[in-house]
Image (tube, rainbow, N blue to C red; front, side, top):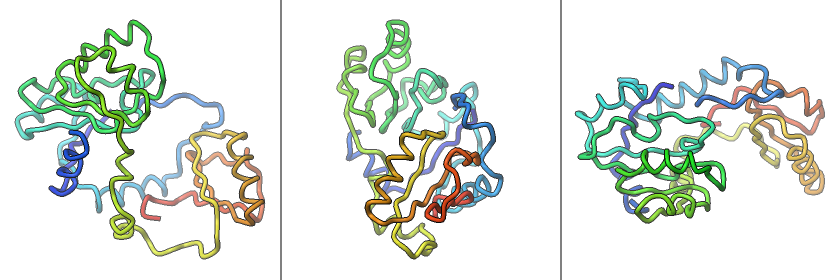
Length: 231
């Protein structure tokens, strides 16, 4: 998997420090890739709002970046999920002389096997600081000789004003319940539908893939298939 080094503005890096310093799974309901238009929308947003290195690294070449940077932060969602293991997300190859930390890294499970514990102990022994996004810090504190912090999802470190700077103008003028699901989970959708009906709301639904047949068609469902983060 390709890895880019994000170039954080100083105020963002300072905020992260002060706050405690993909192989995808198969799913029968996710047969197709997300639409090309949606991928393009994400690329446009990333290029405009998320500065990153020109060089793209994989886990085998990540160590080459060490000569250009003083500190490395790994994060966040799913990066330490044992089912999607990628050495690059553990900063593999970055020397001990560099500051290494995680911010809101996700293991996505509440237990590790003994084999996984041995692997994680070895991978994390040279980290200077570790923080997780889920309240399962104890499973790592038991195997690493350091405090593990429980922290906010990084999207919540920014204020409403910060997000307003990158948001598009409102594209849906009526009141709605926003839904985003990974895959097609009928139980979750039915719960959202029941809530929306009680509150007399439309449902705005951004699918994680372009397969939306499972949810049927209804005048109260608005599908935004090509939405980008700015929308």
